[in-house]
Amino acid sequence: MCHPVRSCTLNHEDGFSSAFVVAHETGHVLGMEHDGQGNRCGDETAMGSVMAPLVQAAFHRYHWSMCSGQELKRYIQTYDCLLDDPFKHDWPQLPELPGINYSMDEQCRFDFGVGYKICTSFRTFDPCKQLWCSHPDNPYFCKTKKGPPLDGTECAPGKWCYKGHCMWKNPNQLKQDGAWGSWSKYGSCSRSCGTGVRFRTRQCNNPAPSNGGQDCPGVNYEYQLCNTNECPKHFEDFRAQQCQLRNSNFEFQNAKHHWLPYEHPDANKRCHLYCQSKETGDVAYMKQLVHDGTRCSYKDAYSICVRGECVKVGCDREIGSNKVEDKCGVCGGDNSHCRTVKGTFTRTPKKPGKDMWKLPAAANKFL
Image 1 (cartoon, rainbow, N blue to C red):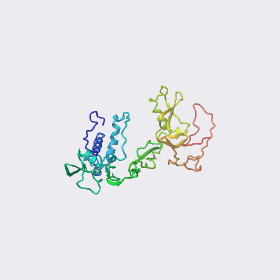
Image 2: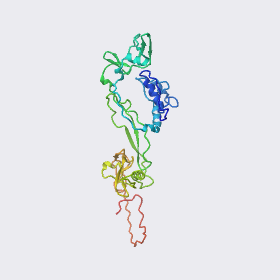
Image 3: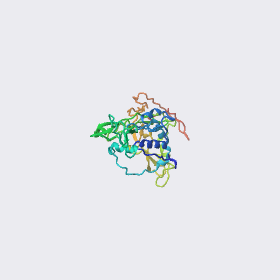
Image 4: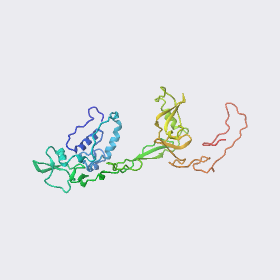
């Protein structure tokens, strides 16, 4: 894609169906291979996949195969030349259906050359099934590119072609509501321990909304908690780690600082990364959200930030749970499992000090 002399394609314009050839060759430039050659998408070629070895896509039947999508996703991150600033262009306003502006005769001329018109030597039951063309010099020799006329082409008074059929004109018929595609697999966990988050997504493309149709209802992603086991370093502070990473590259008031974690007093901003300078005490916003899985507050050991929002998590590590630890440290307990440890120390303490007694792990509520 970014090679100085190879990032282009040369295509012969041969009618409206040339759009699929242009798309096919552009797919190669972007790193896509032919469907069925070195991948498992050979079955999609007969259904009009754009990257079929022999392009059979038509305006009523075309799609990008799963393999094309995977190959694009694999290589797109390496194309640094695409990171330039986009430019604005006043593209022409197109009609909702492309055939509105072109008659069947005009489409024949684009497909086969000057003088060609719709074939009148024989009539098919539905002229929108396939576009047949002939030249007046040889009217009985009819040719086709095996595709229907463009959607919106007038096929009879008050009718137009739509998806290969001659239908009465109805603006509402153009509206297509969106429907969700299938869910992706869950991605990797945002943390290796201490409770992270992993996501799965879906796209509103089955079909995509068009011509004023409604968007898909609901959300396009779901998440679940993962790696909820505590980290080996019991007092490891995930927010502090994120602030420390800014020590070498974030300047505040023309100076570098040692950054410490800072919990914003505004609960709505606690999932944004704020850090406090060890040297000056100044608080700075690092212009980013905290990583998914960061605790919302030091006063809540379980609720975490997900995409900039605080998500309530109970002590049972379930999203939306209201369970809390009782006085004994038991999740959802009734304070009946507490064990009181008492001791009396009567000796005079000596420097540098002397152990009085050892507290058991996870002990709390000291008096």
